[in-house]
Length: 177
Length: 188
Image 1 (cartoon, rainbow over the protein chains, first blue to last red):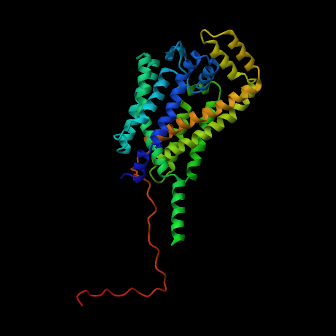
Image 2 (cartoon, each protein chain N blue to C red; image 1 turned 180 degrees about the vertical axis):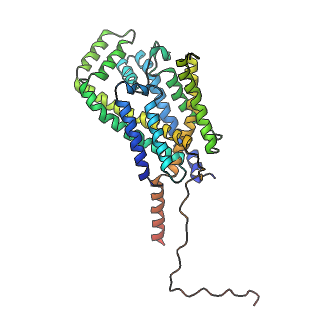
Image 3 (spheres, rainbow over the protein chains, first blue to last red; image 1 turned 60 degrees about the vertical axis):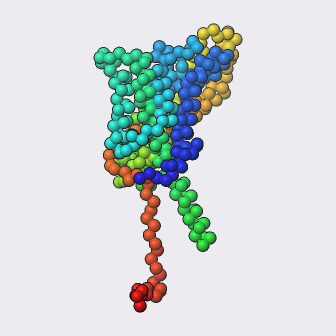
């Protein structure tokens, strides 16, 4: 059964979907910004943004997309994941949340190609390419974003402050009576 | 389910995340899709699902991930400060200089400006603080994903959909009320 608040969150512009899409969109913009900033005459800002992503990505230039003569701030796979998370936040996936089992299958199906593409080159059976790294990152990000949006919706529905607010309104009603 | 039970798994996952992300060499595993951040929050979700008597919702998983990310980033910062002092506060500036050196067609005055900037200790501290907040945001977002993944994988019980409100039971009548009237016959 759908919670009535779910409909409100979906219809509201400031819904969890737009919050998630905004957050991942800003990160995608930060990833693409360094080459643009460098070509616009702001190399320090470009280098600073690149350094910000260094704890979360290896940033090997040979494994990164190049734009305006410079690599992006993260590698092919990470860019695919961030872009997938951004695009997945905008897409509604009703099939994923039918039951716990379908949700688990979707999550494992999202992780499997990424894991195979990352681990199989170690065994020598498969040599990944920029396209495979980007595609598997994208395939991971899109369903996981749906999971995150649903999680944020549920979190906001069952948040303690909502119960406190409901309690206060009930108290006010009681005092008016 | 109360919020207190969430703190223990979040602390365990957060400390794991923070320490593994701060240790030299081991922290390079974070370059594989934020492996330690995801692992820390998945571990927290696993512990929470195991301890919970009721089915855990995705919302709880996201909240747990958020808490794990916050704790983990704070632990990471606490562990990084000694490393920051030990490396003579040059780590991030060296990285910044290397990144700028890789940029083609850069005028020499820009390189000189960066060199002079790097020599100022205060600027380095400011960059570290900004970097900390950037990492806090990224870690919290990724840990939220980890928490949701953990709940999606480990929670196998059927959830009851939306959180249920407490049942609204009418209060019992006071004891001094007269007994209810017997039902009247409408035909009479």
